[in-house]
Every structure is written in structure tokens, then in C-alpha cells.
Amino acid sequence: MKLATWNVNSLKVRLPQVLDWLAANPVDALCLQETKQQDKDFPQAEFQAAGYHSVFSGQKTYNGVAILSRTPAGDMQFGIPDFPDEHKRVIAATFTSDSIAKVKQGGDERTTQTVLIARPGVSEEANAVSPMQSDRIRVVCVYVPNGQSVDSDKYRYKLAWLAALRDWLKQELKRYPQLVLLGDYNIAPEDRDVYDPVAWQGNVLVSEPERQQFRNLLQLGLRDSFRLFEQPEKSYSWWDYRMMAFRRNLGLRLDHILVSEPLVAQCKSCVIDKAPRKLERPSDHTPVIVELG
DNA sequence: ATGGCAGGTTAGACCTGA
Image (cartoon, rainbow, N blue to C red; front, side, top):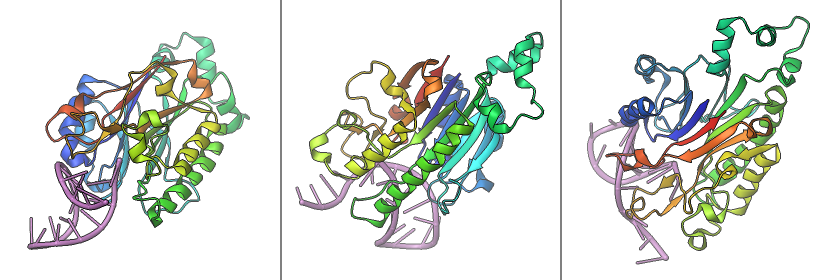
């Protein structure tokens, strides 16, 4: 099972690139951020024609998230519960992996069948924590606030937002032990994720309170899938449009895929795909892909 | 030290992003 995340910086502009990318990278699910599109304008039919279901939560001009998937999404959640927010920044949904779905269709795997049938008298929670529920994956797509600058109201909003995200995910992990948190975190977790840590020191995206919030997510029992593997030095997922930053590899690693502990053993790879950043009219972010065995 | 690019809005600069 492959999952990916991509901040497209306007889905209207990037739709052809997203469709091309999916054709070349037929992932099971792709999380999008900064669609900047109202739901009435979401290109659902185009994705359907490409073989993808979609769930989306958008607004005019800013923000907007979506999940494209091979199998239909279940149990959708939009936004962080009990955290009122005008901004459309979160979608969560549950998916069943293709391989298991095939076994399910085959029907001769009795043990698998038993697991997949809803058990009467067993609570949703008990079903969720059962080690037998190995096919159910919770996908959480996030577009974390940018924060603008460390002395701004937007920065304070960012920190409050991240605290609310952590509190919610703590509950979410009890229901869904197999959880993947994908998106644009707008945080470079460590100095090695920054092209010039000295110049960026204390700046928004790298400041200590933001990095502490990132570590708080890890403390829930999530792991940065990118760092489970040996990676090239100076690996980034975002480059400024200015200063020929991409050509000079002046970037930051802001887009992350965190996996819950029960998924770590299944995690086969995590890569940043720089190819879309080389296209004409690229997004300033590029996709990150994780493979779960 | 500053801003440099891009997208959206709504037809001008301005806001936001990171």
C-alpha cells in the first residue's frame, strides 16, 4: 500500500500535473493541501475518470485539503473536533488495503472473513484495537498553519492548532491504532531539514516551540517515516520560488508522513519525489510517498 | 538589510504563502 502527500498550491493550476503524477505513480491514496478551491469546483469527475475516489474540504482563495483514493473513504472527519476553525485544513478517513480487499472478495480465507465481518456485541473501540483488524488504516491529511512570523497572531494560532491536533490524535489513535498522518506540517523538525540553519534560526517554520509541537506528535507514538530509512543529505520537500532556490537546492523539509508504531514494521520506504518540482509552473512543494508492506 | 516568485481576488494593488 502506497500513500502520498502533496501541497499543490492551487489545484486549479496543478490539476494536469496531479493527473499525470497519479498515472505515473498509482498510489492507493494521495493527500492534497492548498487546493484553494471551493467544494463546488472540486474536479471530482476528472479524478474519478482516473480511477480515484475523492473526499475534499475546500474554501475560496486559501487552504483546502482532499484525499484521493483507489478504494472509497469511510468514517470521514472534517476539521479537528471541538476546535472551531474557519480554515479548511483537515480530513481524516479510513481505508482498507487493496490486497486484503481481494482476499475478502475471494471469500475462501475463513479467518480473514471472520475479522472483516462486524462482530455483534463488540464495541467499535474493541474492534479497532483488535490485532486482527490489520487491514484498516486511518489516514489523516493536514495542512498546518504557516504562522507567518513568530511575533504574529498567526503564529499563536499555529501553536494552538497543533496542540488541538495532538489532543485529538491521542484519542484517534485509541480508535485507530494503524494511523498515518500526512501533510504539509510547515515545520522543519531538525536543522538537517534546513538548507541554512544558521540563517533560519528562530524563524517561523524552524522555531523551537514549533519543533516541540512536532516532537509532541512523535510522543503520541508516531514515527517520521522518512527518518526510518537512510536518506540523501540535504533532502527537502519545499523550495522558494525565488532566488532559483530549487536549482540551488535551498529548501526545507516541511512535508511529512508520520506512521503509528503498529505500522513501523510494515513501512518499506519513504521517498521525496522531486520530479514535479522540475516541471513548468510547479508547486513550490513536491510529493512525499510512503510504502507500507 | 531588503526582496526576489506565484496564486487568488477581481480588474489595482494587496494578501498570503514559507
